[in-house]
Image (cartoon, rainbow, N blue to C red; front, side):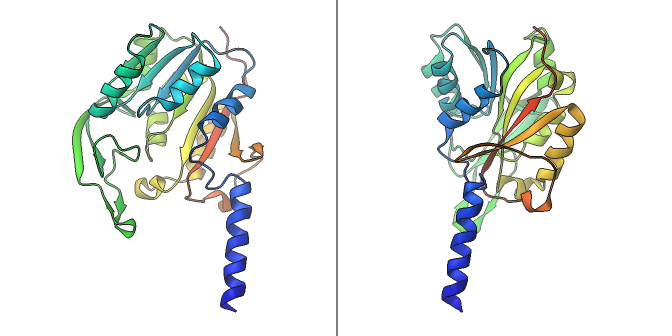
Length: 249
């Protein structure tokens, strides 16, 4: 009986993986390729929220040399790495800030400085023997304010959101800017357990704002026709939301 259950559990994990559930790590090249497939025109402006050390932005620039990219990253050590990596490029703007639903100060927690898992929530990962004992005070802003002030309400071809469980809060600060987004990629996973946010919240947000939602899988993009409770899988998974309306230039 125990052996049979192990076989069933293994099959279950593999089937989920092929659906993209848990297929969210080390897939940046494919993510960028699939995002481009949903665009109706070559991108000219991209926003990378949660830039970390710049791997996603670098892949965007590889796909479209000369693309204007705005990178947001709150961790001090990573801002330094981003400046070293992109500082000589006039088409890349680095903003040392997080993105949320309000402007002000917040605490960024991590198990070590510059960790990709750093979050504005102090995560409970004791079951993995990981402890978020490193912290620093960082700035956070509403993206709509930046969009109006710095981008002059321009169309946003690509937006990437990977901010460890605070993606929904960031979307809450997009305001009218969300209607200028062509495609928006976001991550969902274990961090959403700590922030108590669910895929259903994202589904309703994008339904209200006029986007179709796709899951990135090893086999390509899977369009999600409707919400099901079985989608609440807290293994790292990447989604893409595509605006149903063409975004005017």
